[in-house]
Image (cartoon, rainbow, N blue to C red; front, side, top):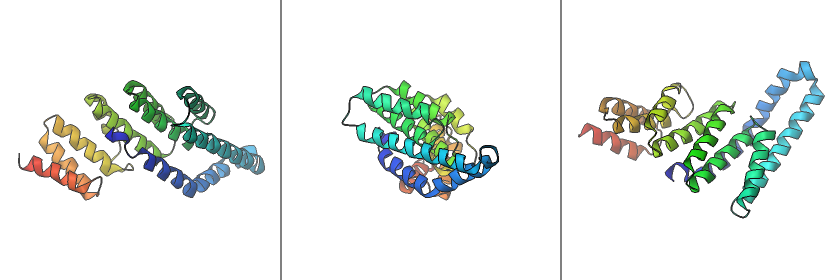
Length: 208
């Protein structure tokens, strides 16, 4: 459950981030497609799509906890199908993964997160989803899959320090103390995660 205990805060933070930065992203898309579609037509389309997706996501948030699971599934499927590739589709898949995890269907949770990774165009949001996926893989002891995912993360990726903590955890689990120390030190240098906990992990390795 630790991988999902702060999802509500993460979702709210992402929604606020989108409200702050989404306009510039949409404008960039408009500028890139204006020649093909025409400024007014494309602008109207983007505005309508964003508003509709936002309403659907708000509906999903309201349904969770008070609505039958089948209704939640139908709303979530509609968002991910109709607005696939949007920030709302990614947030929906994150929520689907959390619900599946709570219901102890970790295979379904993994599938939702994998789809979110594959269908997210925003680097920051994709990095957050990958973190959730790595946490789930470690939780289910899918060590090799977790390592492969971490190995594919660029050094300058968003949440690089958080990924370093996961690399350290995997290396420590595998008995590779040197790699674990390096990863934990990187996390400390980048002030990632719970610094006191990371320092404790590093101290344990140095004293072992």
